[in-house]
Image (cartoon, rainbow, N blue to C red; front, side):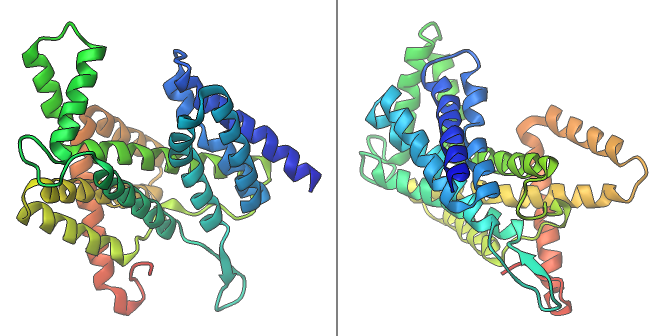
Length: 316
């Protein structure tokens, strides 16, 4: 018990230091803050969910003590919440039908995190201090445009009006999806890193999943269809929210597409070279690579769903 408490205290303080590196404006603050969930997730995957709760509370107290009370909310949303969800769901298990242990599938965990990201988009839209409707003088999209425009004006006052307008036009259409997509990517990267670190140290509770065998829950497909329909049919802010929810929901399908690439390369003698080339091309293509990879994932999703009667369906 004492050992678990000591680990939780130490990792909680480490997480707060990583998060505060951004708040305090250090040069590498953005990179270090991205790793803030890692100590909490590693602690939980090693010591259990209770240790994550203790470490998270310690970290939040340290953040509030240094940066003030308002900093508690961004820390809770960006660091503590995804850490708690990852640890709690990852440590769930049940007895398999043929004996042994069946651990919580990574596809369902991905569904949990995606659902939380969607909830954050909807909550953020509800909290916008403007009426829904998307008119020229009100609505979520107009508020986001005004906020981004004001931020650019403060951070880059030397830009011309045309340059600022171009920047706003680039950021606004998918800004909620960009923010929550970054949040989702941070949670997933830290979860995989925490599990990998514990496995190398021999301190992991559960075996590492075979990520190339990723399967997604069927409800993600339904959410994607509903969001795309809302984006296509509804106008104003409803269409704007639908478009961003659809963009965020495509992230798991992009990961499913990458899992397919890994599965295809696994049986080849030069698998590492093939994957290095694939990721190099994706990196050079930047955001445009997201579309075909997500398309591949959607194709795999539909094909496997059609084979559900043969035992090849999606996770429920």
